[in-house]
Amino acid sequence: MMMVVIYWTFDTVASGQILTRILITALVMTYGIFTQSLINSRNEALAEKDRTRQQLIQAEKLAALGAVAAGVAHEVKNPLAIIIQGIEYLKSSLGSDAGLLDASSRIEKSALRADNIVKGLLGYARQITLKPGEGDIVPVIEESLSFVEHQLKDGQIRVEKHFAPDLPVVIMDSNQIKQVFTNLFMNAIEAMPEGGALGIRAETAGIPEGRRHLKIVVSDTGVGIPADKMRNVFDPFFTTKVSGRGLGLSAMLGILRSHHAGINIYSEIGRGSTFRIYFPAHQAVKK
Image (cartoon, rainbow, N blue to C red; front, side, top):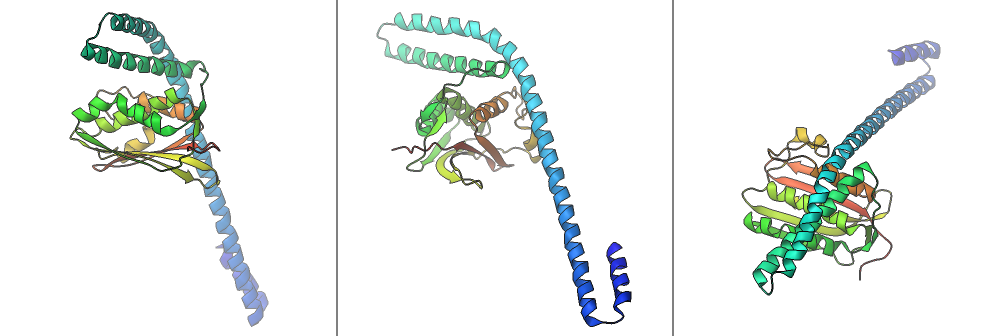
């Protein structure tokens, strides 16, 4: 309506002069462009406000998780320490029985991994100092795969790996990053009850800001995540599984944030899910 009034006013003043009419048209078009620019700016501001609000909500949820996780972790830590000590004593008493020694070593490795997970959960309540160092991501991925070797075999799931040459090293606490990958692999296995393929890809990638990143892509051919659940997958205690506790992805997000790493998810019902993780690349490059 405002544009019509402006045009009518100038049209009256113009008294039929073509040049003036052209000027009026230009002014009206400029006004329209300016108005649209204001609308776009407002929409961007509202979107940014919503993103900030979601980040605050997520931070509050993670803080709540910290309080609960600390209580659970304290209850588990002492019995776990006794189990680890018992395994060490058991190994010293097994003699040369290769089968029992192998089984006890697997139990010990799993118990130690559980102990690292407990330490990670305690980190939500009180900051546990990271033990970062330069590292190659491939051995970390390979060892994480070894933790789920039997589940992959029992589930008839094949692993498809592709690691690009000359991957950059990253600064990481390898024990915590193993938790991230183990969690992702277990989620993928549970999403493929009829078998399928677990894809793992590592490559160098850039981002709009121009900084090099190490991109890790973990994909499955499973059931997928419903679109209405995607927004909540990293919420504490949220799960799409009947027997799940919903702590895994939330804890994983906390670990990645402590490493200044990012993650995004794409999922399609009946076709599977893809997780992309971006680690800041260190200047050194793997030889």
